[in-house]
Structures are given as C-alpha cells and as structure tokens.
Image (tube, rainbow over all chains, first blue to last red; front, side, top):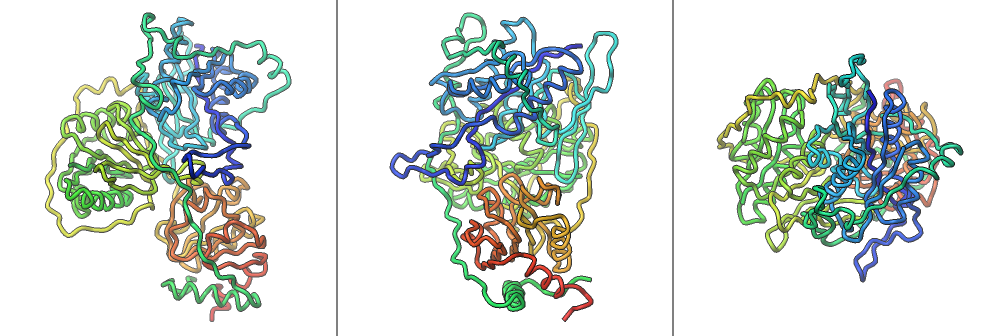
Length: 288
Length: 329
C-alpha cells in the first residue's frame, strides 16, 4: 500500500565553519555572520529514506520545517531531491523554541497537513540529530506529541510481510546501540530518527531542480493555525515563552594548554614521549 | 529535594555512566544542602543490580523488573517512568546520553511537559537552587547554560565518560516496585526483537591509560594499523577522529568527540589530528596531551601539553621499534 510520509528538515549553519563562530561579548549572542546555511546533513538521509519508501510502495512525501522565511531555499532543495510538497512553519512567535516547543510546532504542522489532505501520515522521518544544537531530542518528542511509537538512530528499514490483501505491512527496523544493533518489528504509524548509516542520499538532478519549481511550497504562520478548525496552536506551547528550558549564559570554552615543543632528533623525541608517559603513571611494560 | 538518576542497562547490567551520574548527583545534593538521591531501574532480572546503585549513594531504587522489560521499548518504558515521576515528584532527573537514554529521556520529558538539556558537559546548582546545565553546541565551539526554571523535574542527559564515578560509604537502600501494566496490547505496535553485539577488538577507550588517536593526517590504512598495534603494545587503546572514520580506516565506535566518545586517559597521543573543536571536546579531559603533526599551525597544538612538529613517518617507526618484542629494551 502507498504511504504518506513526512520528513522534518532543519536548516543549520554549515558545520565546516563552526570553528569560526564567536560570541558577541556585549550582547551575549552567537555571531555566525558569513557562515552559509545548509540542510542539516543527516536530514538528507531522512529524505532519502522517504524517497526509497515511496519508490517501493508509492505514496506521498511532504517536507516540513520550522525555520525563518529564508528556509524556503533549503525546502526547494528537498523538493528537488523528490519530495512532493513542502511546508514551512515560520513566524516570529515560533522563535527561540527549545526541543519541546519545536516538536509541538512540527506536530501541529503535520496535523494541519493531514487535515488539508484528508490522509493521516504513516511515517515521519527525522535526522537523528542536528549539526548545530545536536540535542537529538526532537524525533522522540515529536513521536510523543503525535502518540506514534518512535525509534532513534535507525539505520535499516525493510518490509517483512509483503502485502497482497491491502492491509498494513510490518517493518523490520534496526537501531544502532553501543557495540551493535537492536532489531524491532513495527507497524505504522512510526516516527523514525535516522542515522547517517541508513543510506547514501541522492544528488539533486537538473530535472529534479526544474520540477521543484512547480511543486507546492506552503508557508504557515501562527495565524494560519486558527482555533476553530480543531487544530489551533496553544500559544503557551510555542516559541521561547512556550519552552520549558531557557537559555542562560553562553561562552566559548577555553581549552588551551601551555604546550612545550619537543625538539631534537626523532630518537630524542621518542625518548621524551616515553618519559612523559612514565611520569604520568603509564606502565611501559610492553604487551607481547 | 529529590534527585533521580535513570539506570542505563546493557545486557542486564547497569553501565558505568549510571554511576558517573550518581556521583555527580551526590555533588548536586551537597550543593543543595542535602537532597534525596534515588534511582530508577527497568529490566528483566535486574533486581540484583539495585545494590550497586546504593554503592553510589542511591537511597531508594524504583524498580520495574519483568521478563517483558528485558529490552527497551518506548511503549513500555516511557509510561513506567512518567508514572513514577508523577507519583514521587523528583526535582531533578538525569539520564545517560546512550543509545537508549537518548531516545527515552526526551520522550519522558515531552510527556511530562518539562525541559531537558542534552549531552551536558557539566551540571551545577545555581543561586536559585535550580539546575544549571552546560550544553555544547556548534560541535562544542559554544557552551550554553540551559535552565529549566518553571517545571519539574529539571531533566538532563550526559554522555559516558564526562563525570568520574566515586563510590559512597553508605549502602542502606530500599526498593520501591513500580506498577507494571498488565495489558500490553498497545505495545505490539512496536516490538523489540533482539540485540546483536559486535564485539569490538581492542580495549575500550574508557579503560585505557594511553589513548593513541589517529586523525586525517595519518594518511592511510597502513599507518592506522600501526597505531592500533602501538596502542595494543602499550596496553592502551586506539581512537580516531571523524575524518579518519570517513576515510574508512577505522570504526565509528573508536571515534572521540562531541558525536563520539568522551575520554579521560592519563596520556593522549595524537597523530595527524588537526584539532577541530568537535574532537577536542571529547579529549580535553586527558591528563596529558601529546600531539604529532607536521602542520605547525594545527589547532591541536593549542590544546596540547607537548607538541611535536614533524611528519609522523619520522616518529612512528621509532615508537614501533621501541615497543615491538624483537627490539624490546
């Protein structure tokens, strides 16, 4: 049977430039000027997983993001990868959200898409963590809001009961754990936080980029979530004021050590390295 | 005040990160001028493990022990912990940022509508007697303080290796059994089937006095294998950076940094490691850092105690000669 799939997308500052990020000492804000924004890398694996599911079973893939208005570009990229539609939840009122407020906002967005299409989502894919905040909390919390079972760090999904009767398949899923993996059997609906080992994301083709121009990209602000359609947003649960966690001080950690440069012949340097090990309590009885 | 720690369980045994969390909870309790330290424990046949929690200061262990709980599932574990919190109302609740804790903790927080700080590098009590969690972002480039002033429990997760475990003298404790729902039909929507472990070669990074770390500058797989051998002969462990994993030289379970492991060896010896912040955040607790890199301007040198500006091919063969049995001195 065809599946309705949502993929959650986060625009992040390009991780290649994180060592350039500084803090404005007066305003106590993060300075990231000049650093380009890109799709959170592992979110591409989530998009790819959704594409593969649609190629196998048919269905519909919607990308959704809660972000500032310029995230349209990132969502166009996801449309170019093959998503059918994209939704951007963008409003000043959503700003400053922690993971709970973010997952609530995404939940409301997904419910509104379901309402407009008249079809419930079967799968929600997320990247397992973002490169910038890296809390890895949104997929589990979104699962709780939706009341869908949720798995985190998923790297494999396959259908185990090819279905002829029009009923629901079961899926065998694998999640990464310490030194191994865990195996699961689940039925839809599911929220899956996928890891980078899940697949190799496809490149966007010229054809994909052309097609993306004509695909629907909808922007919704708080006002679009009116109370009367049964899916209104509780303004006490969104943005900074709706976030149970609040930011305090920020600083860049000082990890500097006053280093000594070891000089001399390579033999002398190696002697010094062993001497440092010995003086720091490393027993140098070499194992056979 | 009550501080809770959720036990991270692997193959029926409580893992070290749980004791690291309890040890930190002890410090927090002291800073609060006293607080009850308690733990939650879920699994199958894990009742015998409760005493180990007491060795690290847990006075009460909330226990759910049943065959159906042998493997983690959000459908069974989340309601158990949410129910326990609603009954006994902890003020602070700490989770291990392991594969299970990272999935479970945020789900519990969401259902309780409370805040959770992820992957904390330190936890403190602030002057309003609240939890102040220090959280890295942008690969560790920035540390932000996260507060949870208006809801309880104030939740936080911490990766293994961040805190140091310190056994306590007292071991008096009581066990409170959590009610396990009888009807588990809802749980059939997602069923954990089993666990497969791949036993990694070499000593765990957390147990090694010496960690030999290879970065992108290692250059090739052959050199990486030499580092592994060096680590083994020194009785240490080999670690790597993200680029070394991406090159296919080593496994991700050897990776050190914000998205890998946090280590605190006596000696860290790095070869061809550039020193990106997201790596440094995982190794800056090493007692001594020795770095070998041919690039004089490599950022790793700023966070090193001893710098060797040289091609590793000039140093590594001599180190190998010194540790190989045939040339043992």
